[in-house]
Length: 301
Image (cartoon, rainbow, N blue to C red; front, top):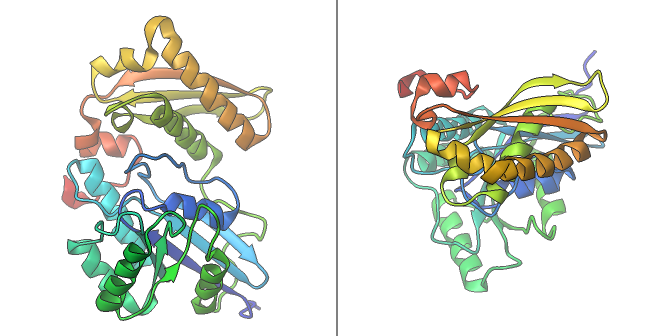
């Protein structure tokens, strides 16, 4: 017989790019699951993190930013975020108190308004914001959704216990979806790909990181060190030598830094075998995006 004394549900964390969604997910779970960089539009796919305590299990869904699409990839990212809004039990809209002018608009805003009964709003980065800007976002939230937002800081933890408690109270009565000691849903190869991509954002400038995607081709855990062969796809032939660098220095540095992160994740030695290949215009080609594993709605063809 199912135990319905427990509560469990999915909470979609949504907001404009770079409002701190990934930082909040990591803080809520207590582990680094979503990659974090100072640059916007880093999250491309939904990342699920599991928090279980007592009789409550919250599955947080980190989503791509609610942005104005300029590539097919962006439209795919926006579709993934809106899908999460539709599919989750609760929606948590995150606002950035240091950029109060950046608010959801258009279709994303209308989708959020439709979910108002199941919507929470949190004003993030209050540790770094001006009080007037926090007040401005609180006023906008009351005017738009008819409710007051919570004040939080994913960076220093302010307000997170209160936010977690508020979310827990509205989850449906349900058995847990995952074992109590699980914290993630995706496979290890997904996190290895994300750590490689995070390192590219850290080590390369301008547009190059946005034009790259990492995919693990082999992941062999039955040996020491663990063998991982991964390909970094770039959009143009001219970007390949930029990634590789002079006499291979660039890809060596990338491999060393990414390997250290993956070793920390796995808790064991790793041999990371990195390759670079062009996939011309992949961000704007639905067929290429699907080949890379992105979920592309049919209407984007």
